[in-house]
Image (cartoon, rainbow, N blue to C red):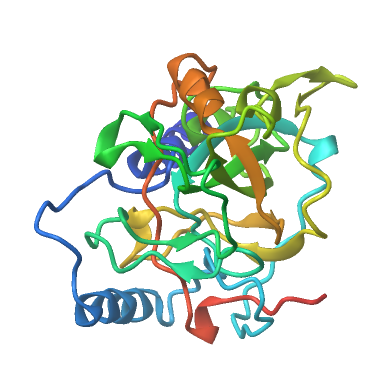
Length: 287
């Protein structure tokens, strides 16, 4: 029993080290890093994972099927057969593709001011200024966020950080992330974030009740946990991803209200991991 508890503790600490966003919260006030710095981080990731048996990594370009990582693992069940364990979001999309292909820039090298933005057009009314104060510049009308609805096969309940997805009764639960990219608009007729993040018991399981079902067929692939703490090292966790290709509009004021009070103790948008591009670090997508 002691050995089992130690293993669970180690796994939990690894997740907590990465944080809810699975990455560091560092910020560089001196502006964006160079292309060379991002390339160096990617080279370090490849070097630090080569020949060590790491599985496919995330995030990725969901419009590309390319991937040659040989590590395979069992596909997680549909999220409706799993327990919701965490909801968090990243400022800018971690994934690229679909309606979020506009590169936000290299950022500070630690996950902020980088990632991908909604590549469509917004009206002047939708962009009417509204500011959500917070870490790393907060959120503003027109910003893009990527929401991760994290699910586990363990007997768990929704909670703070991805440590909520683990339980001492099962050391290697299957994990699935249902992913929806939203753009923040100043429009009361847009989606209410408190509703799309609503959760409760359904058929004996903790469930996210209102994940959008009209934003395209999700692209499913084998990957890992994300976040900028893994810019230069591999994530050891296996995750089944379902990423919806179309963006949904959400009323920015309702995001501000959710951040003030939610089960997950979320109060800001988290940083993004560099897009993983090398085929050796990606799974092949079978559409």
